[in-house]
Length: 482
Image (cartoon, rainbow, N blue to C red; front, side, top):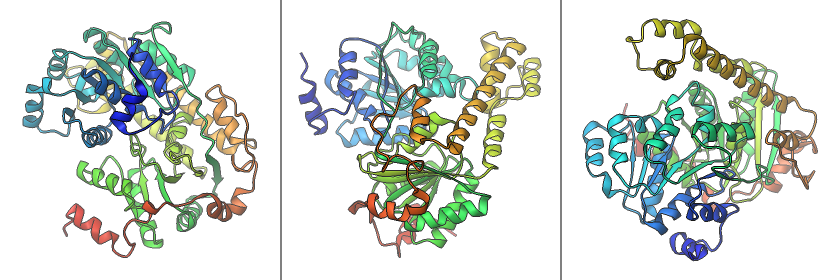
């Protein structure tokens, strides 16, 4: 009988498990495929890391983002594991070939769905003995697979081709519909898999939203908040361009150390910004939604959304990146009426149009290397007709618009925000503290400065370097040249 608490302490130094961790590990050691819905900051990565450390078996981790994989590789190496690697598109041919030739030397192998769909990479992985197959951020199967990253839809078949290894699927938020969709697309039935679903509610995060008349008013409100809010913060955007513009504006108009982070930046720059933020040398990161997956910074005091996220599930995940130390934290959503049109345009641009769909079906040999063609090709390859594929895209568009409308309802609600969020996950808000819940119960916007002083306590690591010289330090790190 394995003493999991002793193994936990030996591996990580912790004396006790976070909620849900022990139950998931007990399922895995009993040989049960598991779907784990653990809140952001619930310690999901420790589950497969500890399983591998105890069993010495090989673990394959399917992960959505290069930055996330790199962060997890660094963390495992810090904990003493040298047999860890991430196979990514950022590698050159020689580097990837060298890793694949020596793949049997690695215990933890991180790979994206796209890399796993590559025949050569799959065949090399399939030759290995696999003790655990992990789908990290498993909600992507349901949310991204049908109309954005179709290789997520292949994971069920890939798992079968790998001879059905023990499987752990993990995410921070998932409605009942999303959970059912994950299991269905992975080829499971509800009785095949042990599900552990912890409550979504993070009672230490105060919820608030403010409707601004226009973007200038929103910018003014953001500047005022950033000048005075204590501690480290993340500000989320849907636009790479505005991520950089607002970061520059805040750097100029406040004394806070602010940097932009988005997928259009090179990997080295993103990694260094991430590490600066983790170390407390940057106060605020203005970022697109990719930033935060796997970022284990416990003392983020606030998350501000400058733009609407995709849906309530994404919103709950993103605000969950503050207050992981269980100390009081703050979530603010700034909204102006044109914001919904930006998100609607993103939905329209993500899902392939009918004209493009019909063109590809007529000219399948003219495949282009972009997301839209890859999605269409997936359905073409599995034998879907034009009309069937069009119906799938129409259904996906309707679902996304419905989810966006639910988020807008959250903004305009005249009731308790926490209750509305939790209803989305079929949960109820029990023992709500009206003094620390949301801006329905208190006059937050009339007293936010008092709230800031009372609840948002910056830690020593938030102080970082002096604000007078941080830009020079960043410039030296990035080797910026004129």
